[in-house]
Image 1 (cartoon, rainbow, N blue to C red):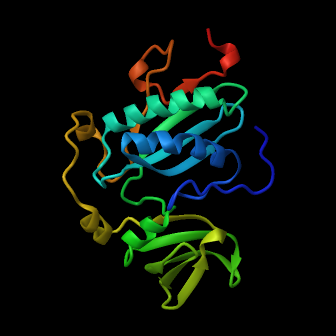
Image 2: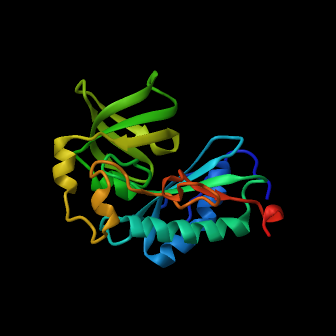
Image 3: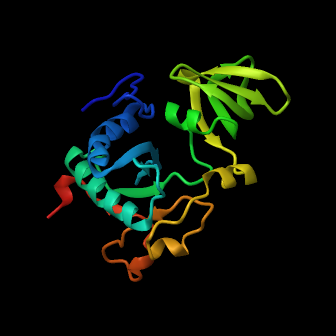
Length: 222
């Protein structure tokens, strides 16, 4: 499937915007995640020679994601992408929860965290600058309004936002505090960082420490 130009995925009422290959992968996996009770937060591809597909997800009911959830998502997403075959060679899959200082990719994320502090990087300069930091005042599908640290207010067009995320503050930690999921593995995970599940890699001496799930193209599978 050839992809050219600027491609955005608007997969349902309020899913994150992606471009190019990330949009293709998001379109392929979002229905499966939805059927499992999860929501897609972000797809990100890192690396070139052996790329890593990073999938970030939320529970649809708003509860915290545990390691068991990440494992289930990894198996399901891996099966979908093995069929879709987005890369000609070897690639890796990594699944994580959004964490507290999460990326802001959907309208619902912005609205949920109104009054919290966020940083924004624009793909093109807005009023002569690319980076902004301030408290979220409001948001809709077209723009985000921030009260900047220096006191001014600014309206940023959503279509020009390259990336945005919450700033980890005591206020944010208090606002998002909730009981940990009933998951024995999750008890060992850092409370202030996204949870990630990394599956054992075939042929690795210490499989529990394998960094990511390796995937092979169909032509190399037995």
